[in-house]
Image (cartoon, rainbow, N blue to C red; front, side, top):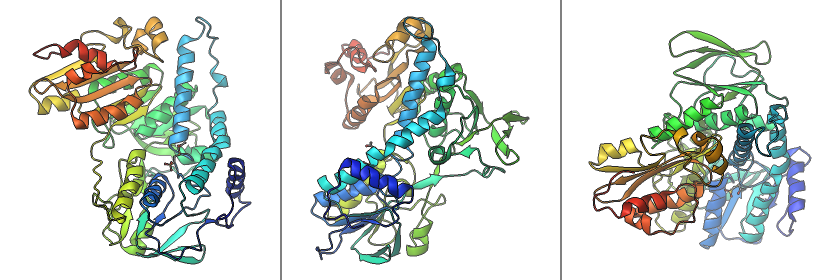
Length: 519
Ligand code: KPC
């Protein structure tokens, strides 16, 4: 379908995408300027966050791009299976948790978890996700001027040639960005119906789970596990490593971790650390999981729903076969800081180059490739970054933990709430939007926060937060820590009181000291 000279409305895009998804439209959706005979500076294979942002940047610099995706929309897995449903489910988990703790008090009705349906939320998301998809297509075409071919996969022929729907396109450079997929651990029975990952949860769930076992302890295990539990589905997490001590997470402060994991247990999530699955049971559909516990004993957990929380692996094999790009032992395409692979003229971005499989990295990888392709040497180091996850809380962290700081600096000063020496249940702080009611009803639920300073230089080294609404601040805290901000400069900032992290006011309480001490 040639869309080059057609402007589709949002509703028309939604309808077209829907018809493509259900198989009514099988042909490629083509938005290519066939009148332009200039060569492509880059073809982006994969139209997810990296391919779309890379394309936008390359266009902005005056280049010619083409982005290709097998799906009938740009934007990739984020709005289809990943970030967007995760945020919807996490918001639902927070709301359900709030209703549950407050049930029968003030204006809150008694809590009826029979009305909390995982299936309903999945359907709600699935029925609404095409609006974001439609917008990605509309914005990319009408506002950003991108060329794209959707609803058909691309085949890379060589470093300058890509084939789409039987037609070959030549390009100066190729940018590979086709992402990753769930790593299925080698557990007998893992292929049985009733075992889901975050993709099949959306595409295939057709019953209401009544009991859940999560295999693995990744971020996704904490996030989806908290949602299932909040929805009344008793959840057990089976993890070899202690939660939040897995290799994929860095800079997790121990006090923050304790608050988060204790909070999950307080809400009924069963967490089996040091445990591993032996077999997924069931004659046909899943009926249970046999697990080896930390003490070596075995236990069978009856369940009708198993969720994989072991992380993802890059989908790199087609490019190894076609181009011989170098990959590491996990299949991640090896790139330098400019996103250049081992094959000249071929770049790789996003989840395809390994962890962290995060949005900021995918988008900035795309931008980095585009800048370099357009002749602007630019390096992207993503070894340090702020991070977050959701349980029934929003958990955010950036910079060094207290323990890391103490290893590197002689005079570490910690400003935290509740302060060391006070138990969470003794103090109704921290309090702000989202935790006000908890402050007055259940202080121990109102959250936790910590700022770590170097007492000598007075520089902020790290910040850690469990609560609600601080994620936004952490984007800027990351920037400020990189630039270097002192406790005194923090104290000079103008806070919008009450605020979720209280870092400005708490820092000001100590900023006057010549010899900085903890608070
Ligand atoms: C709703 C939303 O912005 C999430 S989808 C983002 C896909 S992209 O803009 O291509 O990174």
